[in-house]
Length: 238
Ligand code: 5RP
Image (cartoon, rainbow, N blue to C red; front, side, top):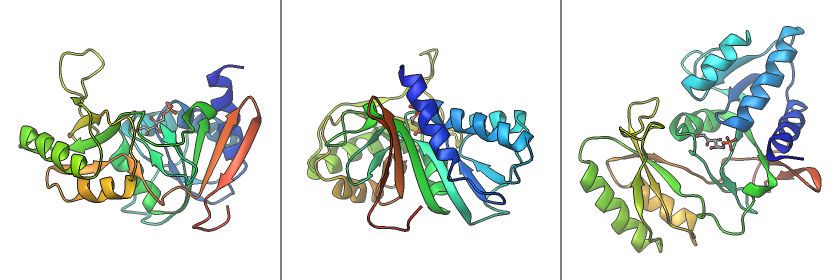
């Protein structure tokens, strides 16, 4: 089986948590896209749900599938967000933002009663950080913000190169749906994610970072051992 098959298996399992009339947050990325695809099939059969997408890409996909969409302005509280992740550890702490949607993903997940992440087992790690941590920043004062991230991350025990993310064609910097830029921070190991998150939050030019701490309630992991559901022990049962 390929990674793609495992992503599909995880998305199929996530579908079992969806109930009629739920208000759902729809994640971003290739795993989330599989979930949205499956959701579209059920909607075509009559499933009644309403969703908030976490990116323009997901919005377009959901619209094309005839999934009813709303906004957090109309529905500020959601039942469940289903999303992918770039890394997760045993405590269900995540690194997200590989697809550049971390800000909307965090806003939508935080507005939800619960969040489920789906992943193939290659995303499970002992320590977060091998996947470069995305940090979304405003364009104004970019160099000053970069230096501040380096300094404060260093005080939080993290060192490594910061790379400004470039668009797929490589010619210009990548822009998020909110018009911001992303530094991918190659820290390799994040010993204390909470301290790093606190440090990043005090930098004015930082809009948000890709550490999702205490946000995911459950993780669906698919791999050679089958599909497993892990629940965080800090929150509600899903
Ligand atoms: C996008 C994300 C994605 O959830 C993350 O990058 C995982 O993507 P994929 O399912 O394609 O591996 O955080 O901002």
